[in-house]
Image (cartoon, rainbow, N blue to C red):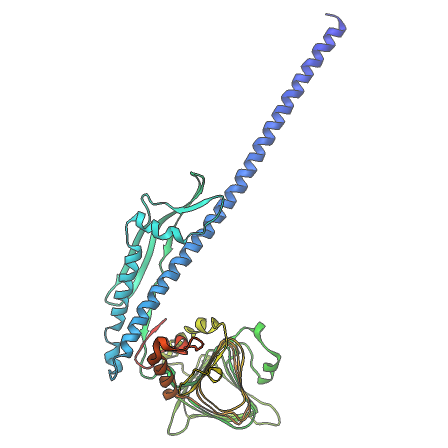
Length: 450
C-alpha cells in the first residue's frame, strides 16, 4: 500500500471517529435537553396541581359557608316571627336544629357516589387552554362525616381520596391525591345581655374622642389596626401597640351603657372620664386601661361597675360573653367592607322612612344633629356640637370632636328594619337596605354564627 493510500485510509478512519463523536455528543445533548424539559414540565405540572387543589378546597369551603348562611338566615327569619318568646325558649333546641339542617344540605351535595362527587368538584376547577384538570371518577372521592349529635359537634367532615389529574390531550401527565376539609359552621347562642341594638358606636379600628364635654349612652365597641395603618393625627391620643381601641384626649366625658368592649386598650390622656353610675353599672372589657398625663390637663377616670382586663391587673371573667360579642361584630366586617357606593336617605326623594340612614363606601362627616343609622366601610367624623341618636358602624374609625351627646336607639334600629321589611320588593331601586348589613347582628336570644 503506497503512502497516499495509507493517508486516505487514516483520514477516513479519523472522519468516522469524528462523525461518531458528533452523533454521540448530539445524542447526549438531546437526552439532557429532554431531561431538562421533562423536569421543567414536571415542576409546572406539580405546581399547577398544588394550586388547583388549594382552589378546590377554597371553593368547597365557600360553598359550605353559603349553605350555612342560608340555613342561618332561614332560622333567623323564623325566630324573628316568634314574638314574645323568651330567650330560653328561643335557644332551646336551636343549635341541634341548625346542625341538622346544615348537615342535611351538605350531604345532599357531597355525600353521593364517587363519580357523583367528581361531577360536583370538576366545575370548581380552573379552566385553562393547552391542558385539562379533572377529578378522577373511578373509584372517585369519598365523603366522610363524624358528627357528635349529643354535643352538636362536627369532629371531622372531609372528602377523602380526591385524585386530581393533569391531562394533555388524553394523556395523564401528572396526578395529586389529597383530602378536602369541608367547612363546618359553628354556632353559639346569645344571652339577654348581648343586645347589639343597644350599641351606639361600633368602629372596627378604633374610637377617638376629644374636645369639650360629651356624653355617651349605649354600649361601645372598638377594634384595632396594624401599625402601618396608623395616622399622624392619632399619635397625640397616646395609643400604642395594639393600635386602635378607645381613646380619650383632653376631654370630659360620661359613658353609660351595658358594656364597653375593645380588642385593644382604653387610653385616657389628660381627660376626665366617668364610666357608668351608681344606678347603672357598666362592664368594661379591654386589654388594659392606660391613664396618660398630658400637662396641664389632669388625667382621671372612675368606673362604676366591673372591669375585665387581659393584662392581668383585673380579673378577666365572663370571657365567653366578651369573645361572643367580638365574633358577632367581626362577622359583619366583610359585609361592611363590601359596600361599593354611597347612599343617603336625605338625598333620596322617594324615601319615606321615619329616620335617616346612610350606607357609604366613603368617609361620612356629620355637621348637624342626626337620628338614624350610619354604616360605612370608612371613617365617621362627628363634628363639634353634633348630637346623634341611633347606631353608627364604621369599618375604619370614629372621631368625636366634642360637645356631643351620642345615644343608642333600639327603637330607631327596630323601626328602620321593620319599615324595610314591610316595604319588601317595593323599596325604591335607588334605596339601600341597612338590614342587609345589620340583619345578621342579633337582638337578644338569636343565634350567632362563629
